[in-house]
Length: 252
Ligand SMILES: Cc1cc2nc3c(=O)[nH]c(=O)nc-3n(C[C@H](O)[C@H](O)[C@H](O)COP(=O)(O)O)c2cc1C
Image (cartoon, rainbow, N blue to C red; front, side, top):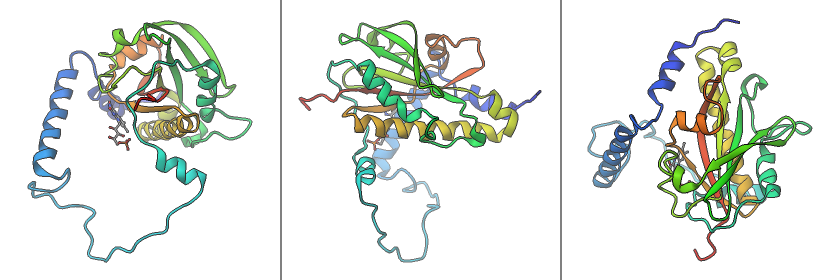
């Protein structure tokens, strides 16, 4: 079926990061951080902007969910400090199993049940000098080894991993084949893909917590670099987001 989504394609191109566009991205973030620290508020102070959430009614305290799921959600936070232990194949399988299904349903929803997003993992060795590249098949819950990948120090700049206080054991890239989603839903399908990747990211985060692993999303990787690393250059796939993961640094 012939389909066009020029606005989504433009949005995607405009939000791509590369060596060319990164300096502007970094400059913008620095300016926003400086503004937040001087204005004391992200949203309203000094800007003359009306807070969209301001309401005349009196707020009432709301009930809290309790139980193990609530605890897992509350324990979630971004951690950027890892020790040097690698992630075993067994733990990698367990970590990614929350993205898999059937036989049980997947742990996240997908518009039209199309499931266009999947994970490709850069799994580093203990010294982080080199790694293996593995593609996850969520239908079968299998991992296919695609070959080797460079070490963390070689990748850190292109992956915008400078926020990591120490090198993560693995980087899980979420990639999308958006063709079917855009064919079915047109421009709106672009939103659906991103929402799905966000739900997957949260599932991964909670799965990591359950395994005693920690991590954080890395939003600034170069698109072309990620596609190239994953062996997807020239295919109808897009890079969405990375999740850096590893064992927590026991020293704190
Ligand atoms: C889409 C997205 C991209 C992010 N990119 C980065 C990043 O590049 N570097 C980083 O250190 N944290 C990144 N984060 C993590 C946020 O900084 C973090 O979620 C936020 O500070 C709130 O902290 P918490 O996750 O501990 O609650 C990202 C989070 C999201 C959702």
